[in-house]
Image 1 (cartoon, rainbow, N blue to C red):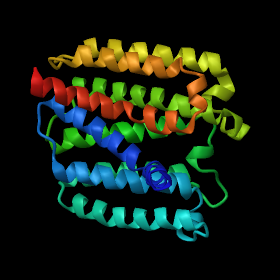
Image 2 (image 1 turned 180 degrees about the vertical axis):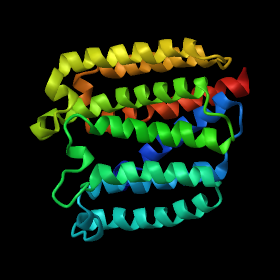
Image 3 (image 1 turned 135 degrees about the vertical axis):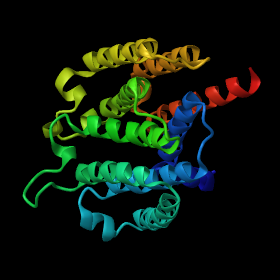
Length: 274
């Protein structure tokens, strides 16, 4: 059991789970586009998310990412470097538009952890900004890159889907913000610090409602999209009202981040069996 727990903890701590969540959202986008998933793009997204997320978690300052004293973090560091090699390999198989979009998203991710200037704060420490940066980057990886890969136009439906994906990520972040309220520095001015837990929950419920209703703004709606977004919205509402469960490490890190995986599974199941 100790071995299984150690493997499971590494799976979470090394950001493998969150990477699967992001490629699941990219998979949903491919389903909505009516296009088959590109294995090169999915591979790139998977490995680059691991590198990016571990950099943000463990390398808020660059030297902390390169010079690691903790043995466990050294293992995660080496794993991240291997993932970086694979990410570059898959990126080289993709087209130029993907490279440009990735460069922009990569700069935002880097600025999230690194200061803009030697004497300046990073984006993570700018009050209230960090969750919007994360939401934008996740939406970029899971919506923009699949659309560019499928050579689709950046039209109205793309804009609606992109905003919806940002709203989804914002809602998924809120349980983490609520869980970390007791540890976060007050200068971060996270939503629970500014609004309180109750109002943050209400805001999350409002975002879920907007997320669902925006589906009807699209010019073309996928056959099962309304039903599956309704199920997804119900899962998000359940998470937001599960206040006591948010204090559990595994509830937030595993079950909340598993919601996009569950959503992709529903798309795959309905398309293959209905």
